[in-house]
Image (cartoon, rainbow, N blue to C red; front, side):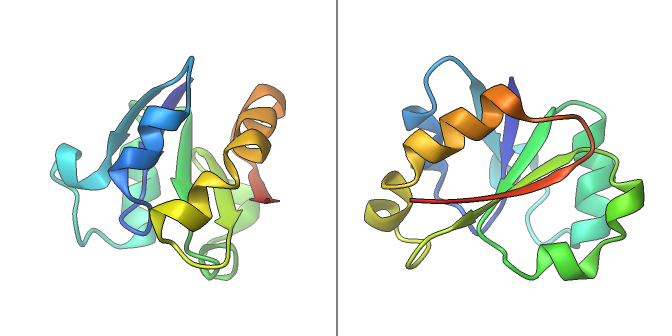
Length: 106
């Protein structure tokens, strides 16, 4: 699966998502792009946007999502806290449906 890591997620988390292709918003040159436009851009090249932005679910029209969104609920967005959610992330990625929103936690 092709995964775009949002600005709220350290790019190093992508290294832990074995079997998937990851890159970051920063590497794509999309830093500071607002969520709606970011999701539209991501839909052209990615299967899912991985974020720790809990507000994204309330800022978007979930009926018209252009790409799947996976929100990681962790104690913080520090690498050591997010790493605890990797098993749940990998499980969710296996079950993810296109253009839906899912939340995972440790």
